[in-house]
Length: 287
Image 1: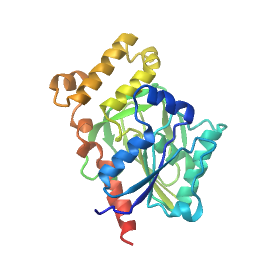
Image 2: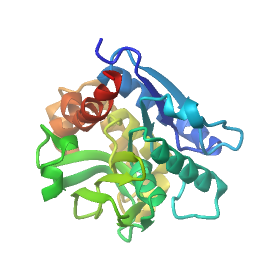
Image 3: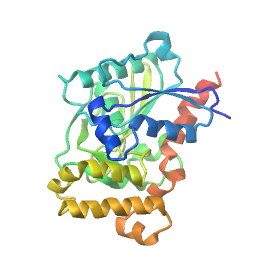
Image 4: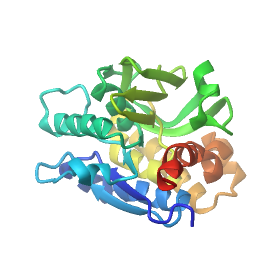
């Protein structure tokens, strides 16, 4: 297998106190979800999962860090611009060390905000609130259309999502690759010091079940925001997502939920991940 022996470090950005309610609402832990996707896209690879928000987490440094072929970052329930929160600053410092070590990085949501913040950019609360469920009509910029992360991808597409913050200022070395009407930065390529970080604000690792689980956890807030008129309406949405996940051929549910092959087909949904593996990881394995 072409990725046999490749070693990836997965940074699960959720703190311990938030991983529990995720599991209680039937969601897969973020690190495990990323490991599953990586093993599907890079058969034969090895993955280690770390929880950098936890005070007792021991993160690799020096040769141990440089020994990884790639680092991937999951989403997180933390807030990147809370610069007095040690759970956040600990992760920023590690991202900076990974940049310095020159290990290629990729990730979703929190990852895009981490890529930018660690390199000197900024993030803030999205004035439109939480973008949830589907990020609609993500459009590639001119730079995005010519970028290797989006080779083989349509210029406009939908993606699974759940976030309240957005990138507001890119650092030097940051390139905007995609955006939509809800979130001004949906994808970035950041080059800083010796490293590279490709990241998307949406979640290619999610599926319908994972979005349903997140909705089950956050339905009160989503209802208060106006996504649903009542908790009962949120439960109907959750049930439809779970039903379509169980029976992906249900055209009625796909139409009612407004989803298509952009998110239902993993060949399409994981394209960015496969491109990162081909461009950034395969050459390292061939050395």
